[in-house]
Length: 169
Image 1: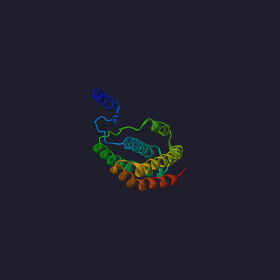
Image 2 (image 1 turned 180 degrees about the horizontal axis):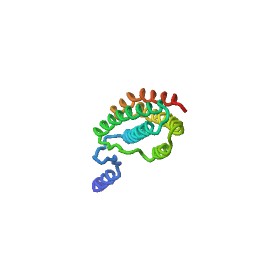
Image 3 (image 1 turned 90 degrees about the vertical axis):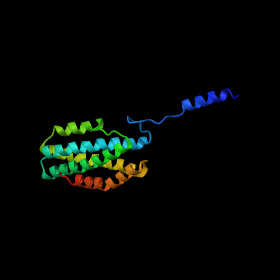
Image 4 (image 1 turned 120 degrees about the horizontal axis):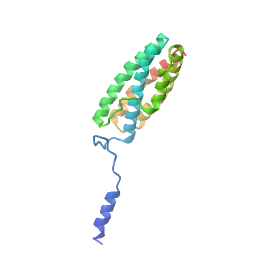
């Protein structure tokens, strides 16, 4: 019976789940926190790119000014998120994710009043989605630092949504 014990122990250890490690070998980050970082960073990059596009292709001053605000606010939040992610051993994306590519391509082909309408609609949709993501992280995130970041950023995101809803359409 004692001979079987090491064998059983070896089988149990071999079948134990192993936490996924990122490129830096960090296994202490919950997958939900990692997903939050990836989604928030990708969305922020998209907002910056669309904000620059709004300044270039927008017709109304309100759209151009809102675009400038998006570039400023999302660049600042992105830098803060990237610094936190680095401490946690998470590599953040440098480009928008695939789910944002469609919006970028659509808006790149528009100018003037057409751009303004489409951009305003996109900003409302994007900020509703982002607020939901940040609310979820603030409530259920595992990393205290990421939870605090999400909570701290939510008022700004709500302001952005309010401004986006007021944009000319």
